[in-house]
Image (cartoon, rainbow, N blue to C red):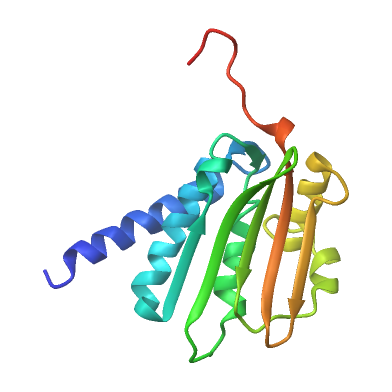
Length: 176
């Protein structure tokens, strides 16, 4: 019975993550669905790492009605959680935010992790959910400048996704 509530939350989050990862492969989904999966993933990592992990979200309401390729945000969040922080004893910071930039919505995923040389990750690997395959899917939908990845060893990583506003869901007239 010790920590039963936390265990129940962890099991529910893990179940939802697995369901989400397998259910919508290669489909366009609403960003709010993707962001709910991000929340579930962060719940799991908060249970594991507690106060060492600081997760901040900003402007999620700006993206709620956007449609984007399945796993477009999760790919970069997972990469940060599984690779960026390693054995660091410093506090870990992960930010996922959205803002308007002209007619576009920009998504930003940034961490204060170990950083890496992004060149190979942007071009190698066609396996679903890799950075390279996610970049290809985003560029197919939004154009060649859809993904900007900045990373410096020891300084962290920032991924910026340019999501065209014309991919925003608009219900048919008369629907609310």
